[in-house]
Length: 407
Image: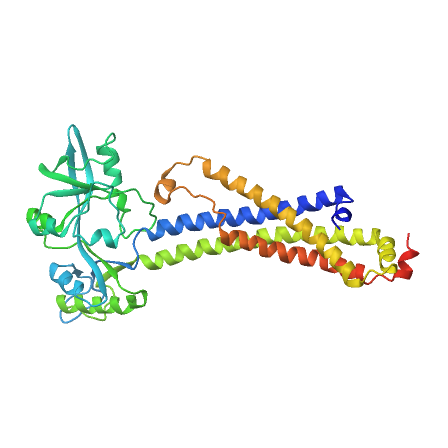
């Protein structure tokens, strides 16, 4: 059977190359789409899971003598009530301000956030080996310690990637560096990406600055289905604490990172499906080419088919012969196409990339995953079956008597 299969080498070679090109197209498109989806999904997820951020709002209507458009600031009393809610797993009040940070001859004006120990868990902040984030003891002792974000680290310590133990000054007050943030990709944030911030204990800031208003509150809630009820409960809690209308949706602003994450993930999943469909159509076009070649082969071999059937070959044997020929061409072309795709994926991974977008999301890397390979195999199988089935059925229906007279 193999001898007959490769009797016309040019025809088989062209058929295999057509399948290889179609396989290369679908595998490459799926790999690029999967790489983009994984890269952006990771960058989105790095903002934090089940993350909800609260900030001050304004009244939208009069209520018990309070005028509309009145500011409703977040207070420490609000935070104490909110953190005690059953569905709140982790929480931190956040004071955001700008401070002059100095080390040696260098002085930078940098954003700083005063937070508690839960903030790193809420926002998925990892610290470089040898350092740590703000601890509960730091807050209890009102310690003068600071954790640096990656941007401040690059600017203030270009030759020292992990300056734990060094002392800097913030507004002329000494602070000990206890940790430095590990780099992470991030494209969703309630304010700025974490890489641009720096963190000190919230109690230390309250001791030094005696602030009366909290800039925001970060929360990690326990389950996604609790979000809507948690928002309503928080709104009522703040309304009761401030004497404003509990039905006024504008008294507190919610930044729901989960919804932003869902939208971005759905977009790239849709893009991956679109690329897969385009690639599959390309492969099916190649399958049409195989079918045409197989029909021509059947027509050319009509006399030979008649001879085989005259000496005892069964119709199913003729059918299997041409289906086997189609599957063999499809398999060889598919393997060649996958090898070409692996080469493309490797080449794209080695290309250096830079820029603000790359810094934010990380370098996108095509992924020829098991899912992609299985998808290609399924499409190849369907293509090979239908490309060979109809010509094979035509061959199996040949009348031996008529075929022997066919030239």
